[in-house]
Length: 567
Image 1 (cartoon, one colour):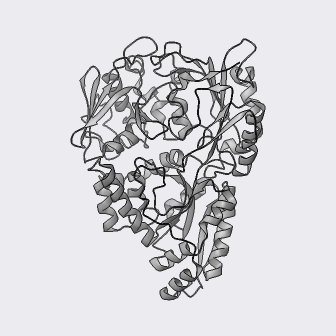
Image 2: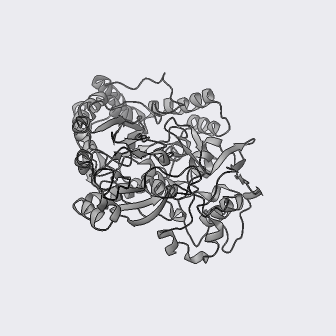
Image 3: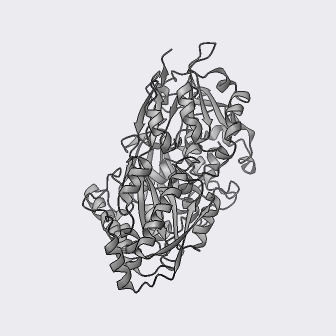
């Protein structure tokens, strides 16, 4: 399984650098700060009003016609609302998932809950049996079946669709490039058992949690009885996806502009229950506009990772009488990667960590809204090992390690930082000053997000920082890639880490998983191929007139049909 996951670079960059870098936006969050949402912020609200009737109708949860309308503020743009082109981006996933449900989804408590499927099981970590909810139907009344799921998987693995981020090469019958042969009518590893049951078979053992988190959450089932009428080569450009008339989710798409807004109207035939609100708008704005939008009522709700409120606005948002503030669990990791090929002595890497006062940075720049940990897992993970004590600020220890390593101070380390993450640009300045105090020279280079990702891939850096969310329930994929030796961002590999990560794919015992991930995290703390500057606990907010809705890092839209507006 590790061999397979080490091939996941495409997914890691395309998906985890958009979904996992969920808190990446222009103001305060950072890693996608150079997105169109930030560059065109002035035009965002104009377009949301001029180009979108729904957004035009309300700034206060309703319209002149008495319709119940909710506006969700987000700070990142979209790429597509076609489920076959899903690239893992969080806004893309949730915006598309309002029309086409995933098989299962995480809830606010990190439990997997049914969406289209009511159960997914495995007895051997190779064969995963997916059972479709008996009540699940398309908006035209047609039952959702195993054929729909298998057909969607087939198209996701189509070389004509060419979605390189879905990692379907893990399944039997799919090539190492992630695609089936052109013209294939089925996938060997995706077999329909009966009308409501489909089985996925992997080439190598995979943990159930990995299947659920990496596949069940991202397979947004399409209606075969509609899609099979389109030529395969048309699926990426077919106009039907711009306003689909057969959906499984709570809302129909009515209009969108990938840089500014998405508008929906309720699916009154939604099989989980007709939505209580009539219309929903996703409004794409700059992070600096969220406070004003919440204050005026033009934005009803923000979510902690799609809607990045700048930390400097936290106190102001807390002071608004019309909203409730909810801080999310600490999941967004301000990760600092060290290119071990360029900084090969672990003692020098340890000195880099001992020399910085992470707790001070957290308190001063994030007002304490987060935590300091070592390794990949935060306290949000069910597998977090509380016995791993983070390295504390000890400049004398750092100096001693450098002396032991024979560090002469002549080398200047190249430190790459995302220019759009203003909070971490400030943190990096503090870190460089603290390194200088112990005899380590480092030079900060601020670049836009695209350049940062290109630099990470080239490995032409000494230190590189980016916000990165390691899935609390399944950090395996990220850890296996980032600690995957030559070719990975760190160029670091260790047999103890490899063995521990392999073990996570063959057990479902929580205590054993905690021990295995703890083993890997302890080794990372010892060898320091990466460290966390801090873990962010981001702010979300909801207008008090909106009921049934709570900002949450996961499961935000799971029960959107129960959202309501008090007039």
